[in-house]
Length: 206
Image 1 (tube, rainbow, N blue to C red):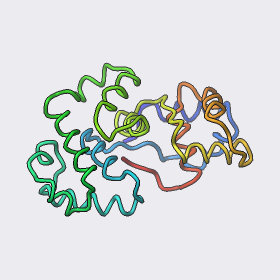
Image 2 (cartoon, rainbow, N blue to C red; image 1 turned 30 degrees about the horizontal axis):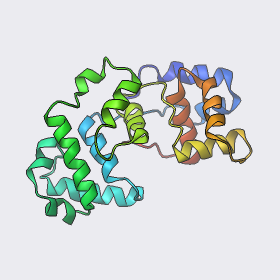
Image 3 (cartoon, one colour; image 1 turned 90 degrees about the vertical axis):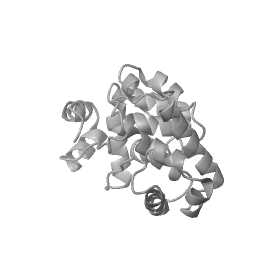
Image 4 (cartoon, helix red, strand yellow; image 1 turned 45 degrees about the vertical axis):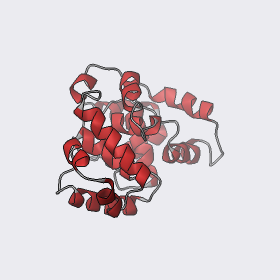
């Protein structure tokens, strides 16, 4: 189910930006979708680091099977490293998943509390976990918490889409990207989603 703000955001972006207007019209009826499971979303992001989407999906299915069909903090902590390694995870990724599970089990990561925290506070909490950096935390804010105004400056897809759509393919600095993002406040997550779609019509889910 799309966020309640989606239509309002799309209309606001389209009214101020011809590029956004074209994208909003082209992808009418589509929008941001969340899988809804905080631990699963973060675990999936760790599994998918530095491998293709297709490979990540295959490894994820094997990991889920090794855990009995459900990826939970308790399930991750109940199996030995060789079991997860046999599913296709590197030793480092096994360590990352284990650290993530511990954070959930001991309450250091509390999804209920995130509802009352601002974006930067959630990012700080998530990046305390080994293997989760700012980009991963920002993807979580967008795809799980559905925060409306996240602008992932280090995302390669976003950089490419802005470069192609607004700068004629010219390489732009991080500062220039941040500046153009200011025109889309308070709906930068929505603008980012549409720019991703301009590169790949299939919606991304985490």
